[in-house]
Image (cartoon, rainbow, N blue to C red; front, side, top):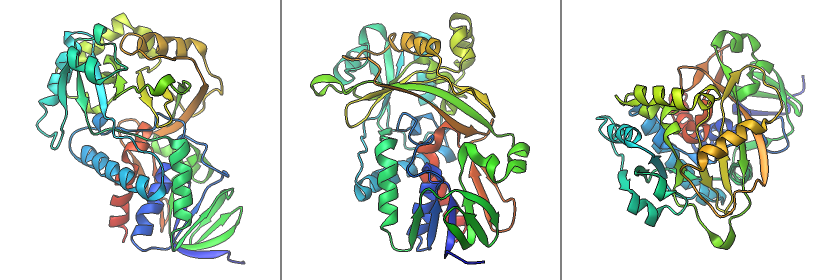
Length: 378
């Protein structure tokens, strides 16, 4: 068997999880080869809001992991040459119950290092141009969130990694078999000491039995992007409303959350049924990314549903306003999720580690998780 190359670490999948692992191990001084089946990034890591969102993570370990990921994003934006905007986030409250949940979030004892604060409507008017200050009674501002654009950041990270000593990045190189120490790919067979499989929703290709036993499912989401906003208009902090409080684990222990969930179930059942919570983020170019929906299952239809975008737009208009809400692009994304967990780590055979199931938190948690895995696999 002819060997195309050798490395200490092999990584299958060049999305944000695989890319983060390549960064972590290469910065340890390990020789790394990364294979991706596509010619360029086209998967879940570019079909998202581009948000690094510590605010959504449960207090404790995940919060600290998210903050570490944020640090790495800022470091790598300078090294790899992509935009990373430290614009923070603003959770807007339309009524007293939503405001109460935000206050309860602030009172959590484990939220070490959180530097956010409650904004009243007059502050929102002055500091959040995209918020409908006339339709909200306040909001929770967090300075920790960062906006990147996966379409810019992932290709820049690939280019930067390819220039690093000891790193080989092979695109258009689908991996079709792992038989350690050999990894068989469309660009030849490599020998590696260890391999990390970070294939996201495509885990079934290499380890279908592991996927079936894991409980991992796939989430389909719908999103769209506006044109560049006119005259340099900026959204300010990334914006979200009360529905978002139901979505993220950071609010799970707020005493008033069950009442809020019940109220939304009665007043907005179609939103709950379609897993809708609405975010608005603006990239460095000035486009605003809007969405999204959540439907779970191993297989999804390939179609976009206009009725769902109508629901997203309808709720968006209750808390946000911008000069140009026309649709420049629409898309759907699919990511792997393990219900009840924040990641899936498995070792299907000696020398092989599967890293999967980060759900919608890949941009937020990948760099921190990758560092933890690299430190535990010296």
